[in-house]
Length: 413
Ligand code: IMP
Image (cartoon, rainbow, N blue to C red; front, side):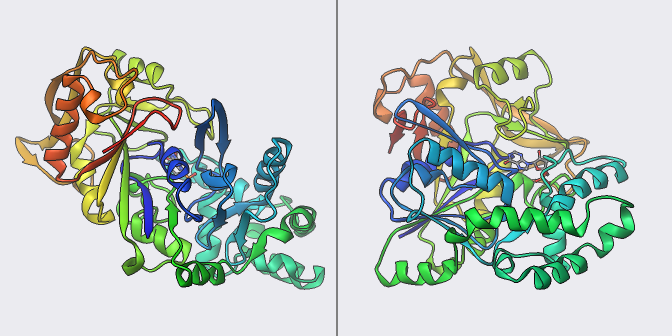
């Protein structure tokens, strides 16, 4: 059984929490796309773990893979591994890094920030070198994890080729020696984890093992299906995540779309249901909506079901996981966007250029308390009405309901 956990909104929906929860009943979890622009928080046994590159399953005794579609900052990965080791976790038979995954080199971080200054409307990237990593990968001059095994001379030649455009753009910047040093110093600690993960995936299928594919970012940030150009540089949709792991689409059994009972967005770009007012401020405080990666306050707003339906078809969602149902219930009145409006025309799909669209809302009664609820039936009536409306509107079964930060606060339907 293969389950893909995917973000349906603009990221930060709580994917890590779900994939960690599912990892209890699986033997392999594969992180598929993006890099340390992602931040997954897992709260288990009352302890909080924040990971950016390691799969959220890392605190469990399952095979945690970093797939070929991921881009890896070696310093960050080493730091996360060391943090886990200092917490007493032995990763030696647990972490496996694809030798095909591309390395985020130090000058990519500089380029990421430089490219933003070239733009009239900057994207508001996380500044982690993600875009330049995928750019170099596409230009076919990227450095892959397997290249770290090369001799110094061979790796140096590759780095020289890689840095040709950078050297034209930036005078007296980061040198070939700096990049070589970065690769070499980090390699010692990482080499035991680097392998051909595809062989492991074959073995898992041969043995009928269960696999969870852990998506990062979300559909609203997808390079092809999001709000281009205010997007990330990978395809964090279900097909992109399957591909970034090394699993074909016909092998996927379930695609779980993760969403919040409201919405949030970090970075720039149009956001139809944004509440840039006291409601947005209240949601931010109640939901602790500050970036795990950058600490930036997230823009907050109402749930947008037009966007979820957009997600439905592109991701092929088979079920939904709705998080923060406890959080939104703290408001008296809650709104859900059920359509867009522009120049008196109504839209039930996401237009290619989202600028200038207004939301059409339905209003719901809030003021619910989910404390102590263990089943859907235990939920207060207003919460049930809210959830059933979402289910009816999208036509997708809500299978998981998050009612608290700890993963034990999950209702399964
Ligand atoms: P980049 O991925 O750093 O290039 O940033 C591109 C856009 O995606 C920016 O608006 C970021 O804020 C956003 N972004 C990237 N990763 C995440 C994430 O994990 N959660 C939320 N937003 C993200």
